[in-house]
Length: 221
Length: 280
Image 1 (cartoon, rainbow over the protein chains, first blue to last red):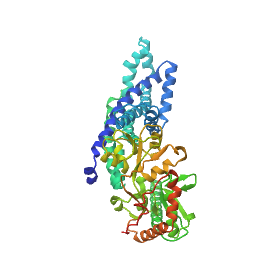
Image 2 (spheres, one colour):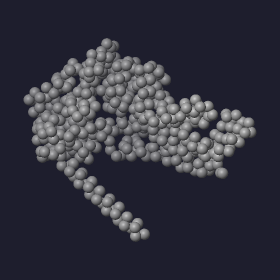
Image 3 (cartoon, each protein chain N blue to C red):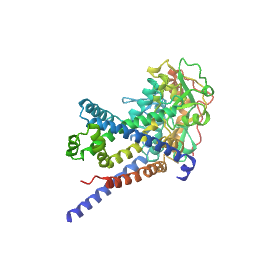
Image 4 (cartoon, chains in turn yellow, purple):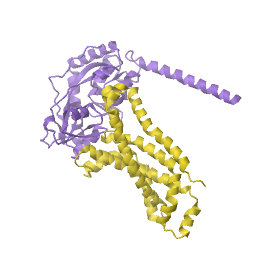
């Protein structure tokens, strides 16, 4: 195990994994919130759009989305996110696709959070004259986020592990380095163990933190 | 309480049964190499045109022909061969756990791999080369690549070599060569690099015929061996004899011409046909 750690830049590869996960998490949280609001809005067209988004991206394999982004969008349609570097383009597209894909899960987590709020609160908010935007911002979303902490945590953990899919377009993250090591050293159990432990180190504390947060921040009713 | 105890006993016995079942099948798989009539499992690539390709229930390619010939010399009928998919990352595991009797899958002989398994052969010497669009004359070899976009498979030896030796080249990695070929044909990348045998297979595919060409300037040596269980020198000797016989009888040349010839691929006659290594 020490052999692999000294010969290959395992930390650097996990650094790339964290980089992908960090920006995708922000992207998917923003996009997912927007889609979530669309699904809750009183406008029928927006609701349909939101539902369509969730159903399309939640039911499309992530690998397909990522390969499509680089092979289809960059090389066939010419949409290049970083013309100066192939790897830059690949990692940016990976972040975009990870964000788009996980936004559908974030949206559903938020919707479940909104559903924990008694219907009377939304009605009361509108009754005292708040607009839809105001009632969302001041009453519903703050409570929804606090109620949705646990499912949001699960989505984040899934996102961290799903960054490995970026290896199929050549982003130099953990799964990519694993392919390199298996090619050079042959695939022993040790190689898998190193990367499994790496991911556990990344995700286990997050899981614990989200569980305790969800308990501390839960809205007492 | 009684019910729970009975349940635990039942669960334990089922577990014990399944364990014995496991060890039985493992010892069966390990017995490979001798005896006719029983299925002879050969690991090949399923997705490499010209080398090992599965089309419906038919298997074609140079690796398939070599494997069939060697199996026949070992006393296994062509009908007894059971083809197993052997993706690059799983080849050592398939051999060492006895899930296949041998692997013939563009398997380069390397020292790291020799620590896990034994190699017979080589039966072919390939080299890293470039595949470009047929109308592209600007790429003549690895030294004319600076500033060009190159494509290869994530983590492959070819990809690593390009990164180490030609840092001025931009490298796009994909999960499979097919994706690289698509990107090459749509002008997203300028060249695809890996073993010339694999490239020749793609250049010969019906949909790319005449559109792609192999440059023909190899810059590495990949010696394809047949992977066998570690330390099985008896089988290794037999396989080597079979390969030597295939070469001397002219069957080897026939298989090369039939599988790699259509793309206009020239076999490097300085290194081919190769002499087999001593078994160890």
